[in-house]
Length: 163
Image: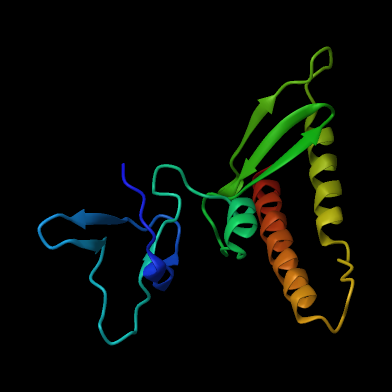
């Protein structure tokens, strides 16, 4: 595989689940962007693709850390929570799975799971302290952190609806 620097790639934005590919046209000596849907030349539709590819979706943790933004309603987002020594992964639309069972301990009861979720939710909703109120960079960091926390609370709320 070849490595290339493609500065104009930033014109395409991220959206989970969008199928688009970049490929090299050997005969035209050009890089082609092939979108799933037609893109309007009038500018009414953004050019988007999934930064992680459709098979390995990207969580908001990765998007925030690597690209500096949070995707609202990210279908790939997860929240990892440890309850009574066991690790759970909570996803969108109430999905969850046990990642790791605590050794030598009984599995958490439904009440312990609910209490653990509510405690994590309260912690996520607690006020976020911003260091410098007049620093635009710090204000933007606080805004992004609030968006990230809000998305994590939504994941927990979606699980609690069906619990």
